Amino acid sequence: MLKNIIIAALEKELAGYERRGLKDRANQVRQELTRLGHSMTTIVETVQAETVDTLKDATRDAQTALETAKKSTRTIASKPAKKK
Image 1 (cartoon, rainbow, N blue to C red):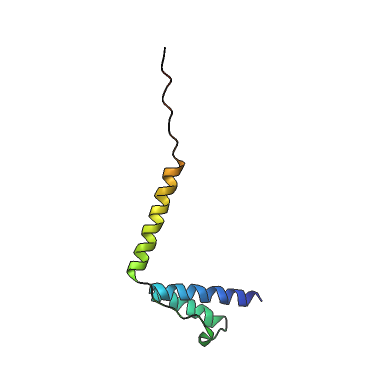
Image 2 (tube, rainbow, N blue to C red):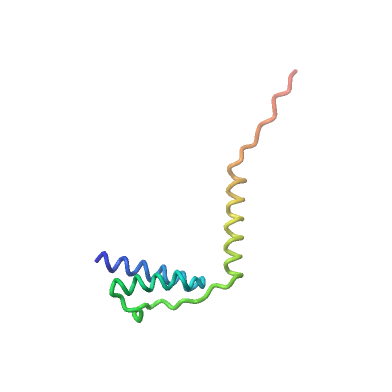
């Protein structure tokens, strides 16, 4: 059972590396899957390559979310009371 969980995790990891074009790391994961006795022909997920624009959009969205979070945590100092 544990072996099946590890194989499933490695398949997801492999799909991510292939999607990002990280061939060396993908080959390492393939070797580990082979070592575990997994046949590479059983991987069901079709991997589509992410474009550079998609990665840039994701980075920009993450930076925007971080800036928004920083702004929302700032406290506004109150003005000192006027003397009579």
